Amino acid sequence: TDGRVFNFAAGPATLPAKVVKEAQADLFNWKGSGMSIMEVSHRGKEFLSIIQKAEADFRELLKIPENYEVLFLQGGATTQFSAIPLNLCKPDDVVDFIVSGSWSDKAYKEAQKYCKPNLAWSGKSEKYTRLPTESEIKLTPGAKYVHICANETIHGVEFKEYPKVGEDTILVADVSSNFCSKPIDVSKFGIIYGGVQKNIGPAGVAIVIIRKDLLGNAQPQTPVMLDYKIHADNNSLYNTPPCFTIYVCGLVFADLLAQGGLEAVEKNNIEKAGILYDAIDSSNGFFKCPVEKSVRSCMNVPFTMATPDLEAAFIKEAAANGMVQLKGHRSVGGVRASIYNAMPKAGVEKLVSLMKSFQAKQS
Ligand code: PMP
Image (cartoon, rainbow, N blue to C red; front, top):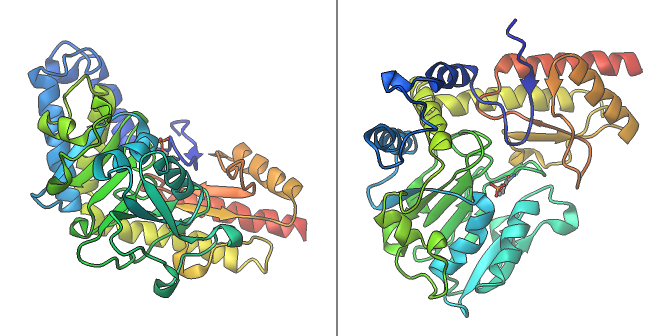
């Protein structure tokens, strides 16, 4: 074997082995340029060809309409928690937040500095185990936008359909942990954003897809680095971008297109998640997933066992068998298997087989 493990980390996360090898092969002397991609000017022809191809492939993957900009930015998804209200709102504008887990809660709290966020729904009292029905969402008439987290990485709750917000309302989605895991109708959103370090590449880039008519209204004090119009006008090259991360993202986009695009990717992801949830649900309660079935994430699968000791023993045994990073987030405990695009089906099958043998040994 090549010594690689099955890495179930939530992010930074496993990348396609093919892509890692390709980056390695190209590292020392990129396409005969005599330089690595870490060493070239971000304004030179080598890097320009990379970022332009990355954007073109990304647009093709997500079928992004012409009236949207694609921005490669720094500061992670967390920086967009502030950049979005700064770009879209005046300080007195009301925006609606659907809080379905820790990440949307963080976005909601950050927005309080720059506008007037309203809690349209929160799943906190139910420990973020479900999503609201349409009638439970208390939208504010005239709200500037409605913010959702498409997939809560820690709690494993994923929107399968997006809330209906009305023609004139801007829907904004944090897709950090299910970016490129399935097709998405971009035209339904004003902004789609996320960090790349789960499904798309190494840490260091956040991608923002923004409808062009939303650009150019940033609050006056908006730092230049947070002003989406500045980045759009400069094709994400206003300052030095994280060139190497963008390069690896480009390799991943090309790989996803070669796999048949996001319809094919989604089919795979549904199959992998199904294998894991079936194993949990057929364990007679030995393993439990707290999330309501209809909104269980295809990316992050949290589950618990009877005691923290048992969970620790399971995680340890998994690691001894080449399956790592299965510990749940420190805020919720338990086990969490992140099974992003690049997790092979064989990794999920191996995990399920350990779950069965571990349970058998305990009873
Ligand atoms: N949103 C979601 C859904 C996330 O999972 C994360 C990171 N785990 C973030 C936002 C924050 O992203 P970053 O670390 O890139 O700022």
